[in-house]
Amino acid sequence: MQLSIQSLVAQGSFTGRPVKKDISWRQGDTEHKATVFVRPLGYQSAVSDLMSGAGKQDGVAGRIAVSICDESGNPVFTVGDITGTADPERGALDGNLSMALLTAIGEVNHLGKTMSSPISTKSGTSSPSPSAARSRKPKKD
Image (cartoon, rainbow, N blue to C red):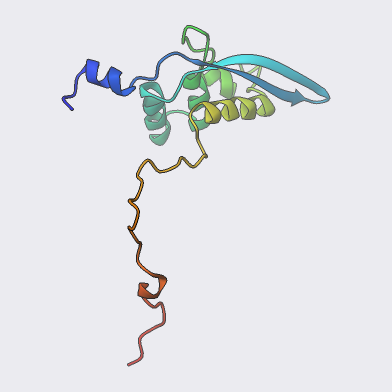
């Protein structure tokens, strides 16, 4: 494949529109529900991950900030909104809400799920037999 915008579009290499997700979380005795939009992981999340790796921002807050957006893809939060540094009087985002948002991000990006292998073996193809495995017993001198 010749790398071009057209070939990347044909391969589905762009993140596309945000995905609508319904979330719920508890604060004390009250259950809350909301609809959020999750931007699939892409360039912005890679930059955010690099910034957190360099110690320039909180990694979890960065992931939420780049992933949770409005229907048009505009960010809803800044890292400071989530960590509480944007408004110390307001404080950090509720932990249960943070977990609900992270769960939605994981669901949209299929994180933590094992995907089936796209490679199939032909009939008659065999794998090495267990007896061919190398012994883990120490060698005797």
